[in-house]
Image (cartoon, rainbow, N blue to C red; front, side, top):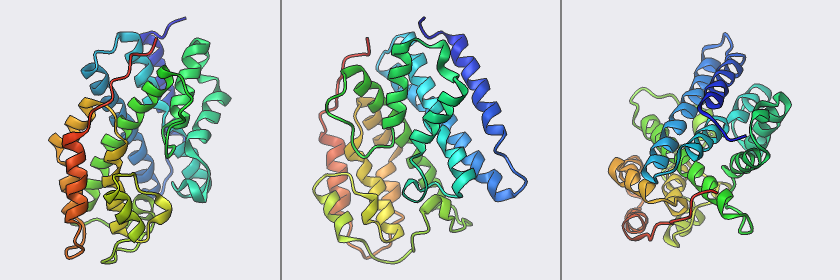
Length: 269
């Protein structure tokens, strides 16, 4: 059977009830859980925005919003079990979320094709790169989800960096030291117009440069337009330690935004 609006409504109710079980008494725990819950809601809004801009039909919009709703489901179990959001120190949160969905049989109302599409897109949303041998529908929705996810993550970090009373939160910045230097491997990745590797991060500045490099992994015209309109690159660049001569990297990223021939994949189905 095809995805229907009432299915999405029931998924949202299930998600809300599921997340509620992770709220604890400790204030920081509640803040962390709320951060991920609110992120999920905003990614749903971002993917709806992208889907509307791409003129997706209703059924595809429902599929897109459902995969956005569940893309970070594993984060809650990950934090409760390991006390971290670093996959390298715990478990792949996409795989963990998919196991939770399967354990609860959440997607049983969907067709086999819909379940396959959504689970693959969720499984790929945090991969460094998408496989080259997937079908066009899976790649289309995987790219759509990855774009929507990045749009909100950028905003989260920009607000964090700009907060005058922020505390160094290891959950947000992985405990990276705020030192006035950058890793040469991170710098070289940006200059080559490549997405930087988290394994090469040494400082908070590296994390900021890595986030700028995500521009090289976005796909659709409305995503590029949103990044430019919201000035994400400029806002992150403004928080990098002065004197590190990052102008060439910033220029490379901005040139990519202006010149990129955007991906135009066929709609799923």
